[in-house]
Length: 408
Image (cartoon, rainbow, N blue to C red; front, side, top):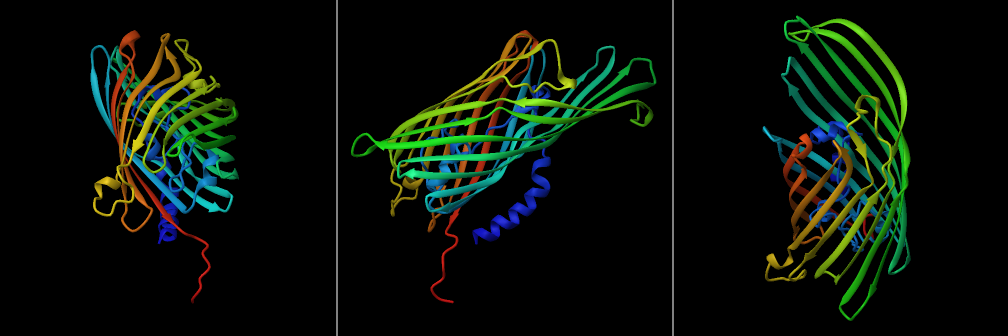
């Protein structure tokens, strides 16, 4: 059954899923857009914590985790987002529904294989200024990531892994301007077609510290890499009814960007299939993601840093009398220093996460629901503050593949 679900879903989503407008943030104008969370709903509900060697859930951050899978695992997740944008004088609300990931994990003895598609960043904004005429700014698109990873279990408690990631996508930014009293306006469209390859390596380790308690740790490093941007810039005049009047200029050129390196270190303690509490730190370099159309004097970049604290609790995972006792209860807190600075002000993201994992009776599969409330940016220094709420839903479907039939 799971094979049919995977094949049909992959065919559908390869056509439509990654052409989505995955953000409503004006900060997505900068760099290559809003960098999305890389992970399943299960980990997102714990503020991104991903340190346990899980046998039935995919850890999309650390490829060493693939070696711990016991069943073929298919994961799919999406998010409904409500974002209230406000300045000192105005407020607007935007809503988005996005696909967050599509991934498959295959156990192969001491090895584990994982592959899938993840949106890396998203661009999606619409801004209008009515001073001395009309100016409209809009953007769409983003960068996607197709990955293939392999994990290997060196000992029952220690595993290593690596994955290769192919990055691809297209970003469009448009500026439309009319001057009061002038019948024609100008429109500028910048299109960036992006592509590149990068690599990620990781390790995971666990050990017993008492009869019931385990210590878990995770370490992974993403190498800095080159992202090639093939740019096209078009400028033309338009009338008020948006009819193109004359093409003024067209330019094509290539620019190399730098995806930043990232180091993630996490640790936790807990009782297997009962509870876990842990913390994680992710630090990233500045990189160089400034393109020609968004190179601005009041914008700079710094090293990014994310702190996460989270965990889960299961009252009784094998209870026969109470379904509620088999539900996984998750929670977490995060502070994310995104690395973007506008008007000398750091753009930070602070959030609270909660989640529930609902087991599907008669199987190891489960449905996971996550909730996130947070604040990004500030109204200081003429910036925009985003108060957001996310509801995420993920499927983790598990089955045995490659089992030799005894009877035909």
